[in-house]
Image (cartoon, rainbow, N blue to C red; front, side, top):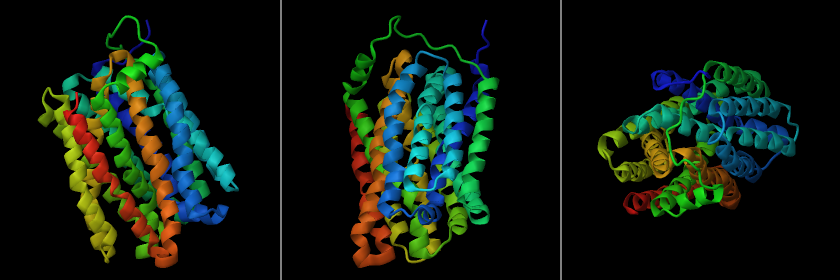
Length: 408
């Protein structure tokens, strides 16, 4: 009989899934920390770089996510995840060979398609490995991979870009990801799934049943709209620190690594922990945690953007990073609560579809476009005004998450 990962092995599985998710985000964020070096080498504009870091990646990531999630609901999730990790790692390494905007866009599309299977597989696996009373904490720990990966990209990637160039940096990160894929493929096996309906509904009915729930619709909209600012900040803050405060990639990476990486990881875990403690048996109370944390993060964002001293700015960015990350555990857990066991990967993919198509697809690109609008009058400071405009989406997203907590 096939070996299976049981709940006794859940901590090891969670640790490996978190490491995989860290590389998922590290491979994305490498382009942000190396943005100005890459931009100079391939001769791209700010709008093109925003398109490359956001829209081009997000479109293929989101549209690949639904069919890959359906495959995850029917096939071996660990195998699919390991194969996907190997694929996106290969395309990360291939990015180093790019000689033009078009070449790099094709490589980033490959990264996006490969990464699309990661979270649907992981969320479904964690929902089978952990009981409902611990699920928000488990998914929150997994979600710290976003910020651990950002820390890895900013600290290690920033240093490597300065010392060895961005091309060797991309090659190296891709190679390590490929080794991790081999570990995942060989070390763990599929856990038993929770029993749901004997006959799963057709794909269209599954998606329709999720979107027919008002609370899920508001959840997806809120997370997606909030992520417009979230992804814009992840992409453009290193450039903001360079243009407004004169920091090079190594210096900004050294500061942003702890602030965004460790602060975001702390906020993500704290949000899941709070949701489990405050929510009790009521999933909607967990979603309310996400709304309040997002609201609380907003004033710190504006203090960061308009502080004249770089040390004060980074000090203000720390609470913004912590509070801004707290929505992840409650939001993804509620998506699992809305779904039947046989459609959990699909529920995660639908939520990620909104987060990435709206947030990642629009956030970095909008900032790039606004930079061009503000630059004639503000010069290098244009990025500050662009980020200030986009950061208003925190308030809009928080409103939708509050509706999700009240809707039926």
